[in-house]
Image (cartoon, rainbow, N blue to C red):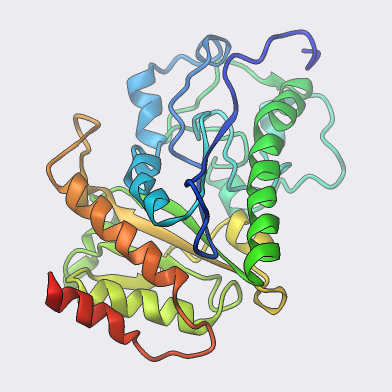
Length: 303
């Protein structure tokens, strides 16, 4: 398919900006998109209900209140099962395509082996997504119209924030199923959050430390880097020596939604309010100092 031969069905990305950015933080939600284009649905035998299980459903809305504390949010509107913006652009399974991939394509990563490349091969439950192989031109079309506009918008926000504040903290926002081994927490009880900083390479240790302590302070169980140390976004943009700090946050979906019904429950508003507070405190963190900020306990005492 010629990328110029079809119309782009929906805008690929949305940027939610506060009236004024007051904190050196950018939020990103690459997996909460739910706009399923008819041409995509025509290529798969799976219905939308099955496809939606791959989404980080409502994560963009969950972090929406953080804009009120002066933080922009970039969100992909296309679904993760269509294009996964948290992968390398050519991190794909060669067997999915008719035609030659670029020589630089990453076809052997563990994510590709699991069927979860930039264009996923399988749905959340392992079912094949496509009836037949796709032309390589379809990969190029999705990269040009969806993947690259998302990353261009994200890069623009990071550059603006870095220029204005001298450093930038990117919080990459995700969710995890509650019935996964990490969500259940094995024998140690449920895990509420997984913080991924690429094993310390993507952001200042003080930032990860403060975030972990903040979550524990507010009654959540948080772990680091296991099993989610961060995907492409964390690895590609995290450059602490250049002033760009990236922290991936995975949230247990049971905290805010009914996973079977795919709908938020009463915990949604409570968690959204807490996350807005967390984002504000992350933005105020002194990155070179690991002490727990004293204003957190003082604010909680005043509530």
